Length: 137
Image (cartoon, rainbow, N blue to C red; front, side, top):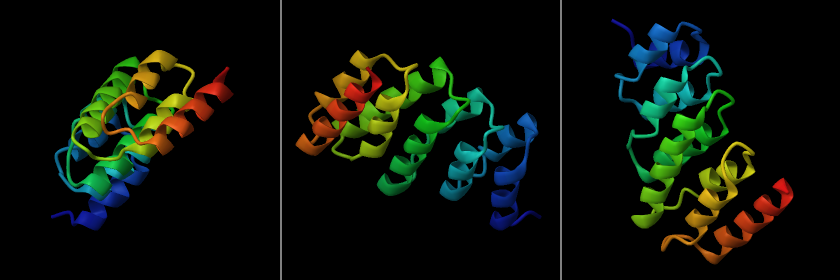
């Protein structure tokens, strides 16, 4: 029977889409984060990971990793945007994910600006968001 360490190693090293899909059922935050860091993780798995919730810290890190993933397509980025908006609305602070989304040229600037207008956005987040969006231009 595979241990959590075995699952982590597989999530980090596997290039097999079917194996990576199967690992989403493990339910361990460090495995989910390793999947989000693996450049071979397919977009459908990344989109599924955007819906996973463990704890504020783990969720914020996972959303950040998903926002930065080189294989994140439009569906993944939409899922991450929705998850980040939900987190901000609930008073959680996925600020690194917001800034990572803002840095992506394939995410419309207005969609990211809207996150800065959320009730949970701090003045510091809004200033960082303005800076990152200005750098995109």
